[in-house]
Length: 478
Ligand code: ADP
Image 1 (cartoon, rainbow, N blue to C red):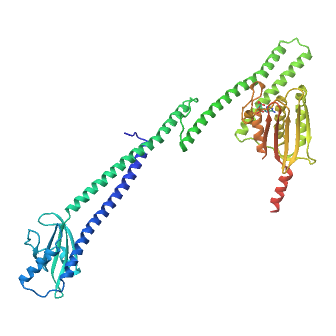
Image 2: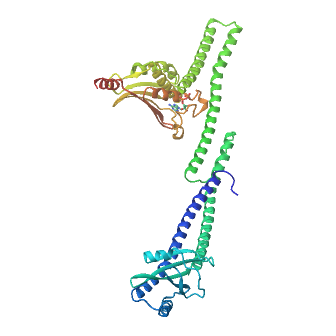
């Protein structure tokens, strides 16, 4: 027994469709066979009747009773058909002579007689009144002196044909049952091949829903089911990855928060205990201010990220001179770079003043983050180049460092939120994700190239203001 569900539906649908088709085909087939058999019997008898008519029509004159009897006998002898009764009737339907042992005393009144007298040939299929046997009667008139005087009537039993037809019907039904059984087996196999993987996938998704993310759909499934299984597996893998990223984020953010907080707490306790000279107090206050700035920076980074996620980041759009922005960035990071004796250089590969339309503060935030990363992930006494150039309708800024570089495997993921190659390095792993989204908000794009141990280049493309103006001019002309 197939349990309720898709499997049963498939089997039922197949079964009904094939059953209906078979039934229709068998009905048509049986009808055609019956018509063929009945028609061949009819045409065989009708040919004989026509022969009788051809032989005896108009060849006779009015005869005496005894001459007639001889004449009827002659017909019976010459034109009798095997297992067929042959009668000679008069116009009224009285049986004048028959080759059957049984001589009917009632006149024949079936429709074949009237048809024969009017249409030259008549056919009737029905049950014989006496025996109840199914028969076919074919009648044809014989003319005497141009008038339909007699009718010859062949009567043949249809029972043998009917029993033959019954046998064929039974055989056809048997073939139908065999076909149905094969279809049933086939559809059950098909249903199983669909239901089994679905059940498997369903069981796995139920486990995933319960939080067991280490389960996977096993087995090689084909077509849509295969795709469904691999999508589910991929989803589980992504959930695991997402959870891992979240855990890493929580641990690194806790660490990031704890370091400045420890500094602030330590110095505030020390200062509260008193007895320090003004110089020491100043150093302590400076450290507290610096660590507080670090905390504010962290919180702002997270707030920016959340705004970007919710599409709530508002840009204050104006005309931005990219060179100026980069120079300000360099000034901001100068002290940090100096600590590692890293040389930062700005290279201009264009004579034009590179202007873009955008939010100056947000663009500066992008470049600050990129240069900050370059410093953070470079060894001491290395170099960082900020290249600015124009390519077609784009302003291109490249932040090139000769730092530790990123492996191919990690490069694909560095722009993902919370991703960090090494959690010991500090930070939240949000910088690149925020930068990327900010650049995209300016209709630009950001690309990273890197080689482990050689260095990293981050390329930011922004639409040139000139080009934007040109487009606006063209639009206003139109
Ligand atoms: P964070 O700097 O807070 O870790 P980012 O999103 O800015 O977050 O960077 C993500 C990760 O990408 C960094 O943790 C680092 O591993 C890698 N990365 C970014 N920039 C560089 C670079 N210039 N050189 C080497 N690695 C980098």
